[in-house]
Image 1 (cartoon, rainbow, N blue to C red):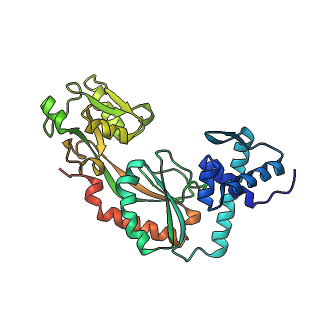
Image 2: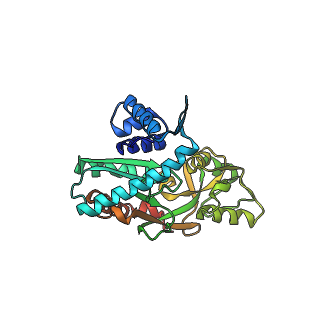
Image 3: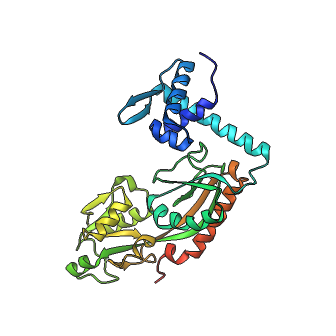
Length: 303
């Protein structure tokens, strides 16, 4: 095995995460040919093929997956060394990667960012809308907004808001079935819900219990809250939706509010190794303040 150029590790991880040379090159700010050349050099240095190449992109081989795990450990250790040795980053500039669910990103987080980024023009924000829990320890993200408190002694967690969920249906659906606010009978009209992948989701458990009590089953299920929202708007059935999505949609009628359904804590999370980053503290404080300003939107109606 030849001596490794450690800079090639960053190219390798970028391709692992982006899935293609072109996407990785955009993240790194270099030509895709440069990325491809550095990957080839790394493979020669290690004496192993790290990726399977196809028209659909680059997929790590079994050997590549092993190397990725080691490379990410190196990345975490290097970042921690820099932060602790340098006493933190005093500049409100650079890149901060935030992850949350697709709906929280589109309905709450992203609409707030223009105010933040106009205030700090040197700040670059990456938003990863993903329902899976990206690893903060492995730097898949710097900060997360999550609907459940994560486990792990190395994480800093803080409740920033309460998010309310209600039962909603389209106006046309309500006219068809004679539904009015306060009226939700899943055995008497169609229901929209989560598939089995959302079994641990609080709103899913509530809906499952409501259906089970009367022997009903949803007529439409999806692992995507966006798809469920579209199904409710389209009149397929009544469904449980977060108030921050449904309350502003004039096509929908609230049948039950959060007091009758469920509310959940929204957690701001980051790894303790990045807590001294000035840009992280700034963004965290901004998000907390925005959550307070938009409390009514996130909590939903109190009646």
